[in-house]
Length: 421
Ligand code: DSN
Image 1: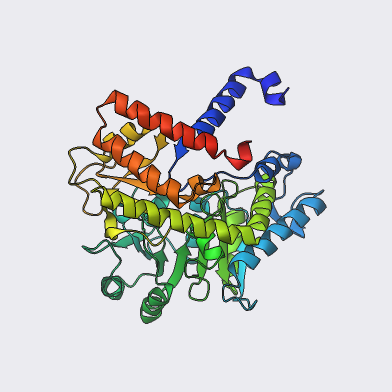
Image 2: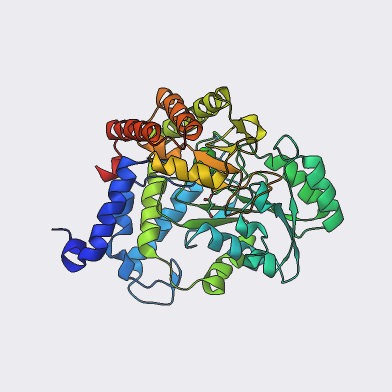
């Protein structure tokens, strides 16, 4: 019997219910994925019992000899993934801290390491696809620092001339690249040139595209940026968590900003799970997986547009797309709810020039990382796009929604989640 089942039937039954939901329904939230059984086992290991404040070889606790080796392996693998993007083995001099509990913690640590309260930070506007930690007034990044924002243009893309104009006017200390809902590639070299012109530091938050960056299917920020942060659980397919990288001497201040600056003891069980995930990402199969993520996103985007749905920027270059429902008689919230009834999990999302509140919105965000992990290929992606269109076009028709749900559940049964079998 599972020990949780024996000790705590209430929690066990909820874990079982959530596992059934993950198995049976189709997960299209762009920031979610299914970690492998090995990653989950490491996250559930006895390493949760160990305190290890400090860094390997420089801890404030005894008994850290073994977890030191775990953290060293995690750091080496992270740098093997991200610090040598040119394909010739040459490193760019990045260091890495694998202790941030999340992407938000990683970003907060970077800011703490290089900004003073009141310094200016320039990032992508939240309602245009940016992230809370890129200077939203609701987040410490927008409360402690003077945050200013760039937006996408009328085509849904970032216009570097506008970014440059804002940077010349505002003189930010840090320019932040990266997003939660931007379907196009980032031109890190162009951002570097703007940063150099105004004397700013450059941070790339690659939380969404990290898996694509790791295998060379998205340009790498490493040659151009002073700092790179990412979560480990999205396209990278590891445990929930973050890492923070800095070039050269900046790593020392970043390490101090993680601990003791903003965190206490590291989660050694999660660091072990990160190491396992990085090991998986270094294997050739991971590149094939990321290519399929892209192929599925292309197939889905094309079919949705054929079915009359507008996508922000007219398509996608990465793992996600943003459906703009402004021309439809229903909101993003309505669409999320209708797709939920059909067994398809998505999130409502603001679109550029949003007229509705963030709790209602005029868009939904779709991503292919999780469905690709369960083995869906482009023919499945086209069919899923048709089922999404059917569910939205007939969202008040319970029979039609029921038929979509039955087909989605059949598709998911044919493609079981590898970590849950
Ligand atoms: N990064 C956000 C997302 O993309 O869902 C969560 O903070």
